[in-house]
Amino acid sequence: MSDLTQTTAVPKRDRSARAENWARAFYRFRQSWLSLIGLAIVVTLIVLAVIAPWIVPHPDHVAGTTNTGFRFQPPSAAAWFGTNELGQDVFSLVLVGARVSLFSAMVVIALAIVIGTLVGAIAGYFGGWIDEILMRFTDLLLTIPSLILAMAVAAALGTGVWNMIIAITVTWWPAYARLVRGEVLVKKQEQFVVASVALGAGWPRILGLHILPNIVSPLVVKASLDMGFAILTVASLGFVGIGVKPPTPEWGTLLSGARAYMPDYWWTAVAPGTAIFLAVLAFNLLGDGLRDVLDPKARR
Amino acid sequence: MLFYFIRRVAMLVPMLLGLSLLLFVVARLLPGDPVGLAAGPNATPELIERLRAEFGLDQSLPMQYWTYLTGLVQGDWGQSVFTRRPVFEDLMTYLPATLELVIAALVIAIVLGIPLGLLTAVYRNGVLDYVTRTVALGGIAMPRFFLGLLLQLGFAAWLGWLPLAGRFPLIGFPPEHVTGFYTVDAVLSGDWEGLRLALAHLAMPAFAMSLSPLATIMRMMRASTIEVLQQDYVLTERALGLSSRLILFKYVLKNAMTSTLTIIGLYVSWLLGGTVLVETVFDWPGLGLYATQAILTQDFMPVIGVTMVIAMIYLVTMLLVDLLYGVFNPKVRYS
Image (tube, rainbow over all chains, first blue to last red; front, top):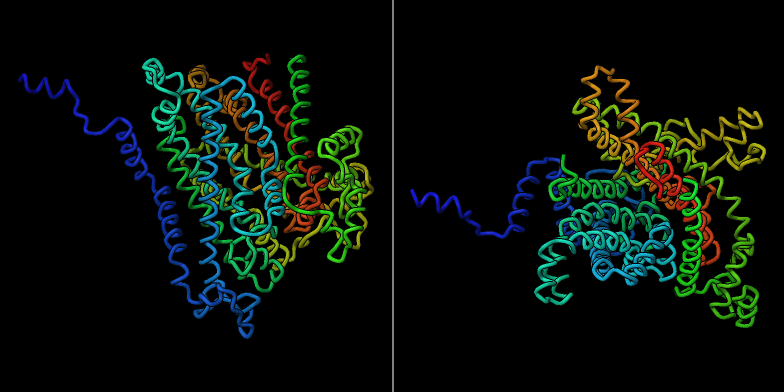
């Protein structure tokens, strides 16, 4: 009898509260089939992008070889998505094009999180004039139309994947800085932070060990919702002719090239366009799912 | 209220000052040589030097900014290095085309999005709800430029119902210039054939731009309506025997509108900045095409000008949104 009271009175905890929250979130995530579809497409896309150079039917076309005898072949068993104006296999180009899009989008988000967290955490934690200066600057950047700013920076830096990544990141971090600042302001008031201040912990320790680990979930939610938009932005830059230049295949650039041959040779445009659509859709579904499980306010 | 309004307008001034400084510094710090590009590959160093002097680029950076700033308030927004045309005049030529497109897209998004959001919230989990939610998911993910291309393929190339691109037939005379909005000008001058042509050209680009805001507004409206419908006061109104229609339109709609309003405000900036893509697809002679041309030739002044105009419109829109809050939610106090 006394045994029983003991086990019920002291709940067994082999995991921390934070780990339990993640486990519960994972359970809820599996309940939503739309999120699972999103996750499945995302995983497939990433795997395909990684192994693309080795599995595409025409790796030589990706490297820039042309085959003008087979220009504008409609989709067939030999060329699933048809061939383009240079006789290149569109399927190979689109598949390898996934690499640039996914890679740059991920790097943009990662850089934006690093810069945004740094700026936002410092502004939120220290407050006062540091906060004032950093946030006024952030707000100014947020008023500038991001696509035009990214286009201008990318054009000035010159073509290339990294220049494009830098250009998009310039427009992307302010949103993260705003988010992190808000979260840090809230967490700063919490008991455990006040306690560690009272215990004499220094600010790097408080920020790094106590505050930041507790604001990971809103960051994850925003990052996953942003992935789709980042892919879209990369493709947009390619489409207006700023960004990655051929022969490196990139979805936006492929679509922009196909525009000239549009009504007659529609397949050259439909394949890369559908790829962009699918990738953005998949990441949005995944992001929606993550938001529903990680953000208690959004749950219904 | 009036005091709040004056204070908010006054706050725009430092914002715009900061913005002009930021844009100016960024534009000058970026690598790139607009004069060299404009002068062409065969230009002699002397010619380039003379051009730099002509555009004031040989002066110190603070001096250049001061010249720009004093010009800004007088309506002299600098000169394009490439075309040598004054930026302000160009902006006034292209702005109406872009605004017409953005307003048309917003009207489509609002007129369809709000009722659909309301309907799907009321008939939750019905057939209409599932269909519109699926379309909305796709609508947000659909790149505007790809949707534009598909519309061109379907309605212009295959069906032949709508013109492929442009703002007006090249051989036709656009309506007499009053506002620069072809649709409005056509109505004002009673030119019904012109109105028909202007609308036919406007339809596809406006729809291509409207799909994403339409989907977002609808989702937002649906979510906030569901939230409001679960409030205690709605239950009270039901208990008092008020008709569903009265509850929905008089009490729920107003309360659900506030969060949707913010989204609409944010979309104004998104649409203005994103016209670049749709204008490229449809050869729409607006700010986006103008900006793209300037960016490709690294012509700073037009780019700064376009950005300033869009940022101004954005700031004013957000101000209007804040003021409209009070209309929908009298609890909001302006202090």
